[in-house]
Amino acid sequence: MSDRMLTMAEAVREAMGIAMEEREEVFILGEDIGIYGGAFGVTGDLYHRFGSERVLDTPISELGIVGAAVGAALSGMRPIVEIQFSDFTAQAMDQIANQAAKIHFMLGGALHVPLVLRTPQGSGTGAAAQHSQNLEPWFANVPGLKVVVPSNPADAKGLLLSAIDDPNPVIFLEHKLLYKIPGRDPVPEGAIRIPLGVSKVVRTGKDLTIVATGIMVNKSFEVAEKLAAEGISIELIDPRTISPLDTAPIFESVEKTGRLMVVQEGPSHAGYINEVIAQVSGSASFGNLIAPIKRLAGMNIPIPYAPQLEKVAVPQIADIEAAAREIVKNWR
Image (cartoon, rainbow, N blue to C red; front, side, top):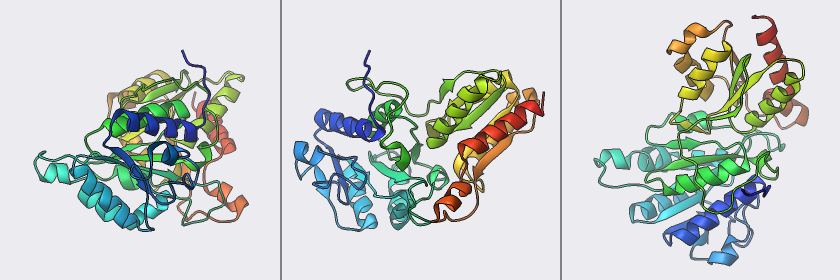
């Protein structure tokens, strides 16, 4: 058993390095990912290890980058695209949503598009409205795309290796605030995969089920640990892959706790958490609820630049704690 405590950036880099060693057809392309090592330092030394033909610095053209990756994938390669900020995927949505996601289906399964698009998302760095969005719902709403949102280094490594193995496109959304933070659990040595589409019970409990993704898993875990000292027992579930969404552990948890709170950083309007609520509402577990479902999400506004406003715009630890106390103590 490994006891290595890596950051998410280190774990993602390690996964890419393993995949490139395993398969010659795996390569990376994106802006400033070569000698510079990536805008957030994630690709690091991969350029020096594998050379300029497998770690390709590209022009500033997201549409061109993803278009080239789609073509390479159709030709038998396994490209890993890094887009500097998830916001910039808007420049390439035609290639992502209308080409990569649909080709396998439109051609009756005759061709595959084994492409992984990695990109940092989320607020907290003072990067303002055009560099701080949480775009999980955009991608989860596109049939043909798998959407992965890791919350810790160990999961990031195992999920990314599985994403690279997948025969069709995977969007891999990494919260930028998590890049430099070691996880709570050690990262296994070697090429250990974690299957896509399997939710994880991060913490067991009996009073309240919280479903969260990305950095909100970490914030919710901190709340759960604090409230445990007060006798409030929280079960925390991290879907890890929001499309496809593994609902079985969520249903089982709701049946046990009778209470559900869903947490996301992005705006509540049309967010992925609404799908979680809909799935629970349409399941047999709905009859076990003893309290209304609580939805906690970002405001439906562009992310502000001012630090104090940026914090108010998305759920913080204090918000999650207050909401958890309310749902448990007011609905017994």
